[in-house]
Image 1 (cartoon, rainbow, N blue to C red):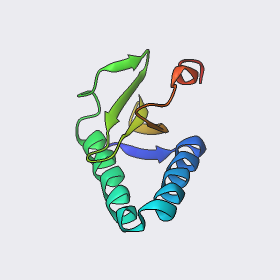
Image 2: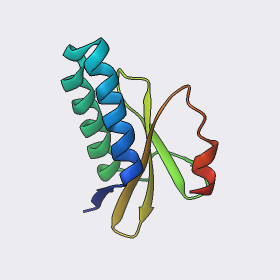
Image 3: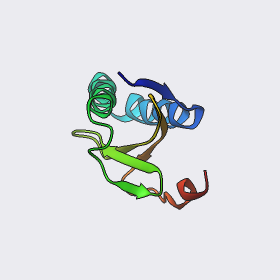
Length: 96
């Protein structure tokens, strides 16, 4: 079984998305959290199902929300590196 760790950057990005929804659509906060949790669980079940987008880094889309979880698999650990909006520039992830 894989252990999941959430990097500080990913946590900050999730917090930012939650704050955005809190201001504009507070009824969506629980759905966003559930979607992120479901994506995280899917990654632990099949971490290599998603292709590498950046060498060593994979991503999975959140269901019903315009976000990706970016992650790396390191032995028995999965590190969620970032959570980005579909339209966000992600070129910085190639150097992280």
